Length: 106
Length: 120
Image (cartoon, rainbow over the protein chains, first blue to last red):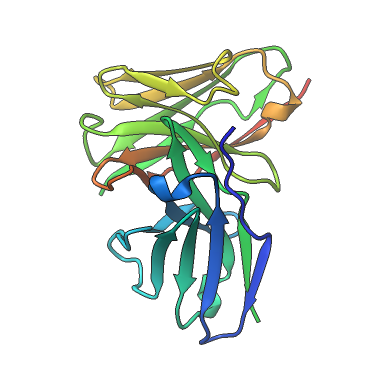
C-alpha cells in the first residue's frame, strides 16, 4: 500500500529555515499538501506543493515537489510555528497522510 | 464563513456501532466533497472516507467493510457509521471539507473534532 514517510522530528532556531520532507513511491506524480496541528487543536491546511495557500496563512510557508519527495519549508521560523506537521496525498482516490513531524523551535 | 461541527456519543461499547454527524453551517453542502478523518490518542491522522452531495462515496480500503458515510442535504449534514467497533477505533474523529479548487483536492476546513472512546 502507498505510504508517506516523514522524519519524526525537526529542530530549528527562531528566525532560521526549517525543512520537512515527505517521501513516497511516485509521489512526484501526485499532488501533496501540508497540514499544521498544534497540541489539542484540529489540523489546519497551510500549503500545497504548488505554493497554493489558504487565505490567512503566512507566505513563510512554502511547498515544493521533486521526484519522490515533497518538502515543506518554513522561512523565518517563529515560536508559533512549533507544531506537528503532516503531508497528505491521494493514491487512486485513497487519502493517505504522512507519519507526521514534530517541529521544535529552540 | 463555513464551519463544521461534529456531534455524537463519546462512548461506544465494543462490537456496537459508532455514529457521528457533521453539521455544515455558513454555506451549502452542495458542490464540495466532505470527509471523515480520525486520530487515535498520540498517533497520526487516518483518512476514513468522503462523500459528494449527490451521495457518491469512497472509503479507505482498510475500513471499507465497516464504514458507511451518508449525506442529508436538507439538513446540511453528513454522517459516519462504523460497525463492530473495537478499542482500536478509539480516536478523535474530525469532519472536513474537501476542496477541489486545489488541483489535487485539499482538506481546507476542519471541524473541532470529537473524542470517541470504545469501552464497556
